[in-house]
Image (tube, rainbow, N blue to C red; front, top):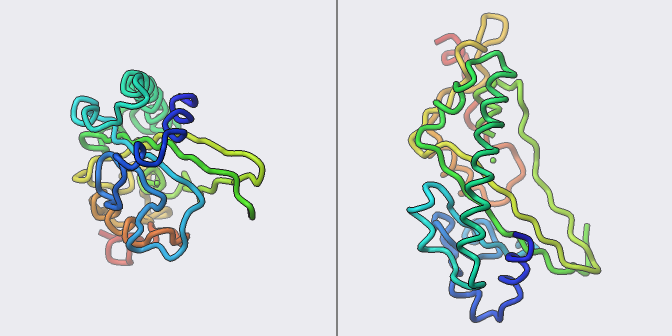
Amino acid sequence: MMQIAKDFFSFPEEERLKSYSDDPNKATRLSTSFNIQTEKVANWRDFLRLRCYPLEDYVHEWPTNPSMFRAHVKEYCTIVRGLALELVEAISESLGLERDYIGKQLGKHEQHMALNYYPPCPQPDLTYAQVLSNDKYKSILHRAVVNCDKERISIPTFYCPSRDAMISPAPQLVTKDQPAVYRPFRYGEYYDKFLNRGLATENCLDMFMATKSTRSA
């Protein structure tokens, strides 16, 4: 996969731009910013973002260069999805929930991946589990460190709920002494707010904190 990413980003600009889009909702897109319409500061990177599940819905939109791109990425996505499912089950179990609890809360499930390319920089200087676990698992701020001497490539995968999935603290984890920290919300509502915030580092989940009335409901 690393070689596939290197080959893709080594293509001439006109070839790479076939996948370019500034629409953050586009399933397959090459860009330099998460949401160019809201960000005031640009990232020092190029990225190719792909939706990967269900595969048959998106593979036809993926680049055809390098020639083995679709075949290798398809295999990689399938393997990573299997790992993601195992991790989701393990997290459920670690919280004292049924092993399939979180998986059932994710609706139809979605999977995205990104090929991130960070060129040498002259001046180098997600979260549903946090809600379901009622703050027992904490999300962290994701950062990438660039290098002034050489390029850097990363290939993260994001395993997500479907937009219509209802996210809320597991009832088994809510007690009188530990009331619900977050109100129930659709994942699509959260994702839309996240997109509109651009690269803001404040925790988007703060918008979904439970009020006194929802804590006691």
